[in-house]
Image 1 (tube, rainbow, N blue to C red):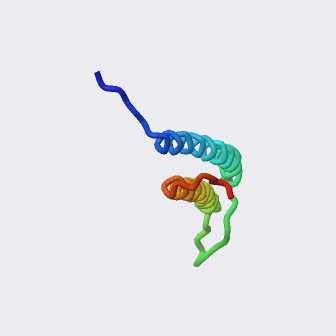
Image 2 (image 1 turned 135 degrees about the vertical axis):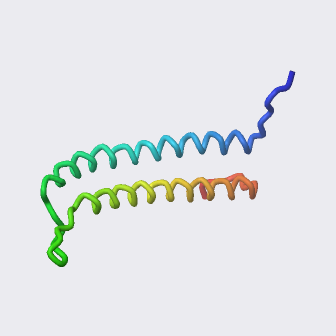
Length: 97
């Protein structure tokens, strides 16, 4: 019978990952839930402009904005995780100063 023994460092990083996943979901869900209906309303005929007689719809711009917002949120969460991981690896007792 084997037991799973985790070090304190692994437990801290596991808890930090859980917290950051919750934050990522908490910030990404409203972006999707608010921009998706907005994009559906704008696809009814709005265009960005006309280039060479071809109307360019606005919905791809909204989808790209949504994806970039979610990528930015994910990037911030990844940076926070790596900062904390570095500080824990450095064995700094005071993580927040």
